[in-house]
Amino acid sequence: MQDSIKPSYSSLTETEERWSINSSRAYLVKTLETVQDLIVVSLCIGLFCVMVIQLRAMFFSLLPPLNFHGVTADILFLLILVELFRLLIIYLQEQRVSIGVAVEVAIVSVLREFIVRGVLEVQWTQILAGCAFLVVMALLLVVRVWLPPTFEGIDPEKQFSMRKRKEAH
Picture (tube, rainbow, N blue to C red):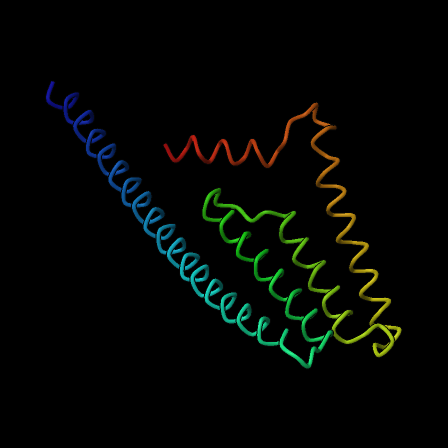
């Protein structure tokens, strides 16, 4: 009779041990996610400070004598920083990187380089490579926009973010 009781006691100990391992693993994952969120928040603060400094420099570049290329470069750089900031905010809210925003940042960055350097001063191979890159980025945006209707209105990114929110609660 005691032998039949003993295995159930040992299985209870194994269950407790598994629960302990799973809870410590969950605690470790939660801690790492918190540290990662703190890193992203510090990136947001740093990026915001860089945006303020860049905005100040842009206003000073508007004073005479006006340097059109410099002002244009400053404005486009500020737009890139704003988009990166938005990318970090989306990451903090939904714990995912937005493909659309990342592609938009890449497109604006390439266009900024062409505008700042001047298309006439860039080698034709660099222009060709930049154009190929822009075509690929545009295709990524189109694919991202046109895929959800093929799933009868189901937006995979929205479903993923809804699932993450339910798991968090």
